[in-house]
Image 1: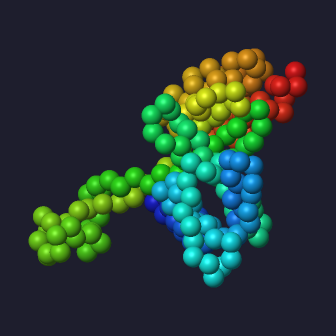
Image 2: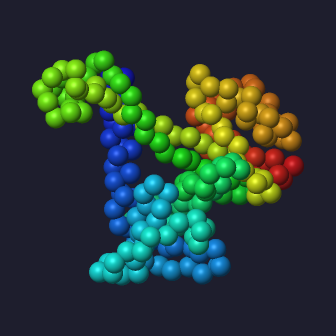
Length: 208
């Protein structure tokens, strides 16, 4: 049963990833304040954008663009360029919660060796039938969460997960709100409720 749910989660991720790897209705926002409606896709932190469906797409990145918004039938998803640290280029992160504190999500797929994969389903690395030339690989989907105050230069990584140190990191970040810290320590907010934690801080703590 656990394997079934894991397969469903991975499938949903790939459907979402496929959606934004293909051209979708979007609004691109430039650093100079301009915005243009058109069609876009994202891959490897770069944006392919065109004004009409028949146009040839141009490639944009953090040098000129601040964010992009995908417009769906029932959902709007925003991706912003966020610099994670002093080194490296800004990355396109999904904006989950917007406010005095913003919550961002980064989606990653990790490839690792899985001994449970059979030779029949393994991927050949050398184009032969020799069992030693097969890479027994599987993919694992991960969601990484970051919180960032508008005044902060870089976001804080919230290592959300059962085995992680998320509670210490979260209570430290929101230390200026005693009621929220108490709720986290009393397990009224769990590691899988980071959305609610950020919304509580923006809506309740800042109003105290």
